[in-house]
Image (cartoon, rainbow, N blue to C red; front, top):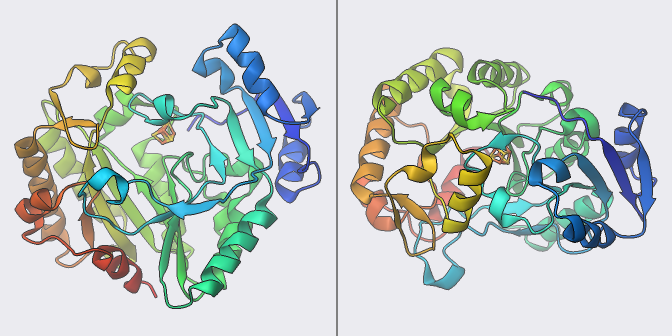
Length: 368
Ligand code: SF4
């Protein structure tokens, strides 16, 4: 993985003395730092000279998040009557934006604040989580930090994983998932995690990683990092998402699954998810400009009811069935689920579609 080193750090008022701010400033003493009242001033400035996204990613803002860190995953069925099967996932947004450059990354069109932001008031985040878990003692929460940022890519600078993993180790009704395309697991290895943190990797065949997932850890590096986490006793998980349909997809995904099960013991795997490429028309435009050699926006994608374009349903079903078959040859019961897919796709792939909350609870029960 290409390590992140900002050209400039901005520290927002209110987080000057926080643990996360201290960690970052100690590790980057040579990077110019400026104190600012509010990050909004940077947004106004950038709107005047419209820098590129690659440029704004070079600025790191250590900010104070004043809203709710914790929310339901927006991929749920709650929006606009969309009927995707919901895995009852929750997210905490501890950071926003990512220095790695996957051509298909939805953050390119999703974020209206294009800088790298880390919300350094981690104490507020943990207090909010503690309140939520205490007020809902019978709810089993599965929570990820990877919605608006990679969970671990900045960890060598922030060490955000340390308070998070330690906090979840003491929780009875919650599991944390740290989802990454990095190999930054050093901070995790000596922590008391009590099996309450799942470390997970998005994986794709080498061909896709090399062509489309720029600056990320190689697949070999990701597997090596996963092995280290397994040795440290963590449950691990894998996301074959977004699966890409291309000439040699069948051989390449079969090889990837072969390598996965050769490298990682199935008994340490909490779950595997599958999902296919999803693009919006706005994201396609951005991809054409930022990654002109990527063939992904040229693929045959059709609009679906949540506003995203996907491969034709028969293609998605074919890919999922094949992958599920290869996984099942390796292990008959490991939990596998499809991300952001409708019940009719589930029926064709899994011969069943879980009811509301059933899937999320099944995934958490595996660990609690
Ligand atoms: S690693 Fe994840 S968040 Fe980062 S660019 Fe790639 S898809 Fe986006």
